[in-house]
Length: 621
Image 1 (spheres, rainbow, N blue to C red):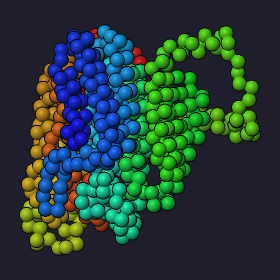
Image 2 (image 1 turned 135 degrees about the horizontal axis):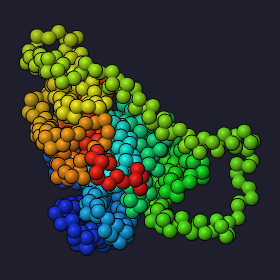
Image 3 (image 1 turned 180 degrees about the vertical axis):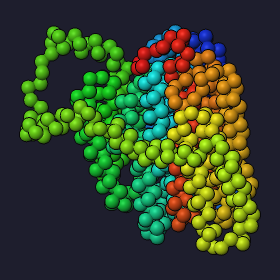
Image 4 (image 1 turned 45 degrees about the vertical axis):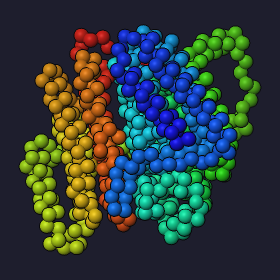
């Protein structure tokens, strides 16, 4: 059984790698590769289900690869299979198979045909890793893949303004949710003193023993997981990103934001149920969040003029009900509800283009308005207020904007961080930090305790400046690189953290940082206009540069293509339980540097082209 589970993860990876190598003009070959890969995966999985049920459906958990091991710490890839995995994988593989067949016709002769199928295969790989994950670290690998593939699919029409802008908005909210997952992983290390697996969470005695002695940490872990799940499943206050994500092609909207990706917040809550099932306050929070989201999203859905937005908010409303079911402990009902909602929303989105024409015809010939509705039982003041709020989508976009506004204000006020001061002040300050590290035995205890937080704060300021930089692309990129160096220096003052772990963490940063810097310099030598004040659209003339720079961005964000991904987890294992400020600045820096680097990529390579002699696409799809 272990070999078969590995097969289900490796098959999409092989399909994705082959699809990347296929020539762009071979549409038939590209689509057939994706259809056959997902089809074989689906048929094999159905056969595996029969085999699994015949052998009394055991819960399967096993360590696949130990990527890093040191005294008291182990980073390993763990796979897990139970009824939750079965439902999510069966629904996911079946819907992906249908959508790949649909796309082979729907996107015929589309300029980005190959790019779309590459991204779908990349998404399917991330979905498999997430669903089969046996611990939070493995889940985070798939989670990151899903995040970047979401960005690429929403920005599929990359020569248009709104798809690129909305893709960046969605990616920003995803990264905001990632803060919760990273901090939950950090707190779990202190709660269980090991890399805990989902199989171990089934042990009630183990979980209850640790929660009794560390009730606050247990609540913190559960609350961080709830934030991550709410961001991924578009629950309040993050609901506004889902209809914005509909700027991508209809098939990607169906598979991503109608059925699979949007339900992964529910999957995370199901996987970690044992951590919060005995915490009454957390269960009340989950139930209230689901109830509020369901009421608000239902009202918004009923007044939307776009059919895609109607479906999006309807899906959000149903997921809110699933959150209520989880808070009440109805696991099976939640799984059935997930499957039903996923199939319904996929169908609705795939037929939405033709449904519009049907509805227009019905409106003129057969439309009969509903005589009464539930709102008629309210007073006029309440009814009209709810209508206006729903029409304005409860100002959710404005709320998200105000969440980011303090960071933008801080970043724009850091005018002293420029190219000149960087060389004159910050490089010497880093050298002083290294000297202090070498001679740390002579530093007073109180100062020694403050230094990690101070250095992490300096790194946080640098990445904040990079996030709001408007002119100098090279400065913004270098500041992201230096943020990682300041983080490594900050953690180095904690005991048991040795220089070889810093080398592991910084190796990917240095390599990908240099690749990105060289790409920017080469692009600037070819183009006159390269800045961050607007979208430049240089992927139109320089697609190879765009691809190389995207890989460099992924390397800087800690994406699992370099050792930096492991290094980030090692860093958090060395942050002490009482170093909350250090954990906050480190987690925030790692999240914002991902947003800042993708922002550079989007501004430089995506959007309408700055050269006026190129055809300008419509703002929206």
